Length: 300
Image (cartoon, rainbow, N blue to C red; front, side):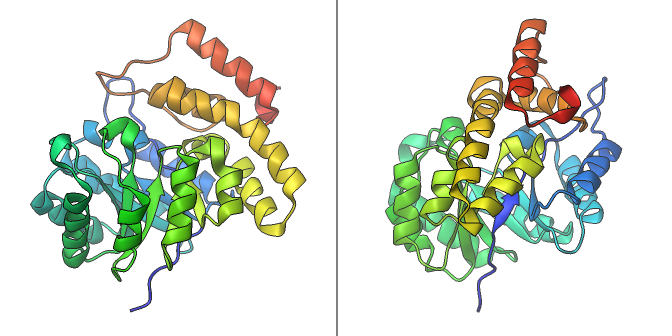
């Protein structure tokens, strides 16, 4: 069985809500149709930036369907699986396939984090992969889960024919480099825009980046420059992307990312409670940083 190969830049799509908190599928469709023209290789639906934990099962399935219908055949659609038990994760993988997803991004279970030793995580992902009808990416996002899956564990998981890669959002460049070194036939997708260029230089297959929701062309251009050996251009773009990436991930979070999308001409929309919209001071700080980056011509 040949593994699917992932590469390129993918945004972890935000989920637009209207002013009364209803999911705005039309806005989501319009965003994807615009993204189709930017060189992105696919879309991750229902990840951390998609507020997957804030939407119900019916909304999740319709969200996957909406993105699949709006994407072109060339764009892979990867659905986030944010469950805490094996049974629920496998069920969600099956639902994702029925809704049109091409692969799944399975988060490390985290509620009983003290019990989530490396052997436990290894066994869990092996069982998910055995039962999932779709190829599996491991989602390592310790800043949200408090659980780290180590490079040596990922290298063991890489031997499973249905585990095709990892989205590593830890920001730990040393660990990402170790995973690239240890795991063969495995797509390591960087999940932190601040280390995109060094991760690509070390051999990462691509990236799933929040900043790509607001600045997709710049992220794609950096990826292409690195692939072509144009390191000066790649470094320049990295230096322009990094401050905004840091601001909308570690700093302002999902509300900041949605505000950045609004500034860039996409439809970010509101967040769902308990998240809150940016205040005036935060909004101005974000706009100032975006203008300074030179990446957003409509703001100049």
